[in-house]
Image 1 (tube, rainbow over the protein chains, first blue to last red):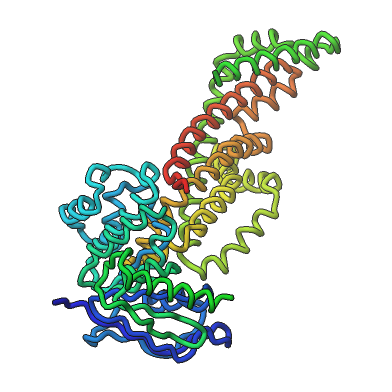
Image 2 (image 1 turned 180 degrees about the horizontal axis):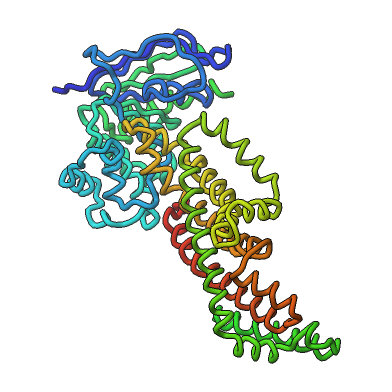
Length: 242
Length: 248
């Protein structure tokens, strides 16, 4: 059904001789959502940066591979908690930023199509400061999709939004990222339960999979299975923190 | 409203000046009255205009060249860590040498013409422009730089499409400072050795006890500086609004 590859990361990472995580093994199934939860400082951001091939300030020994054995470079796009929009560019110009940065000719009609699909068709010429937080995050989603990459990493992209807007954004992202291999880093058990095909808990001891309800995402957040999973996950996380 | 405030300030300044003349009873070759200075300005309009033109050319050329050189330097420093390591300490060292002390050397090398004054204005604004713009280029949100890198951008394109637009407000602040410093540089150059320009005319008038002419020249110099400050300020304001931060 999909060509998005599965991604496997195995290895350890150290900052100046201190291990951040040791012999971590994480697999992101192809074309599915993996939600990653864990306390702050456990290395979630470092792992994202490793996958994105960004500077981590430490040293990684291990391997990051794709199931189709092709190199990952240029096949991963990224969306952060902050929208990272350029305030001097319009919505449309922000969406085509990637093409501009690579010196390519952007496909303007595709860009407009994506802007329409995130519901900002009438706002394409506006600057970011003229938009609400939720609208700006929708522009960031359109920009991420414009990159047309099979793997998408989301670093708490909805955490700064109000509850209603967050739920809308979750549904929109789930719909628009169908078929892609997605890793969502989140602190919110409800969000993870709603969106994840699998949930991975990351701790100092490594990564463990959390049992999922037998329904498919996006899950109804009133369904008993979803609620039970959420509650159990929250209990587990609280036990970890206290 | 703001323009009216300026008028009131000028009126107040004139009143204080006139009061000083009355209260001290100083002779006109020590402290001429505003009216006397206005007469001197009227009588010597051609002379003052001619010298003001020279000073204006020096200031504007010094400003343009200094800004261009500062912008180019800042971009190169921001692009190359090696250049930063080698050139930054040198740049800071040059700031330890008072520009006033270099003026006689520049006059010796470049003569009494406008070249030494342009260079003087250039030197005095080069560091503030370079430093302000370089700070802006280096202070860009790391998240945006990371995003650009994941999109496959080269450092040169990141510079062009992200760092430079994001640093325009900082450059705007540098330009405001430059507009204040450039006239100072040109006039210092003229005092050290010149045959034209308002600084030269002031020294000449002073030597002949034409204090009213000296004051008239000084006021014209101040008017040039204020005009420049407003013009550059308008440009800097636009640059500051360009990458207006998003309200959170």
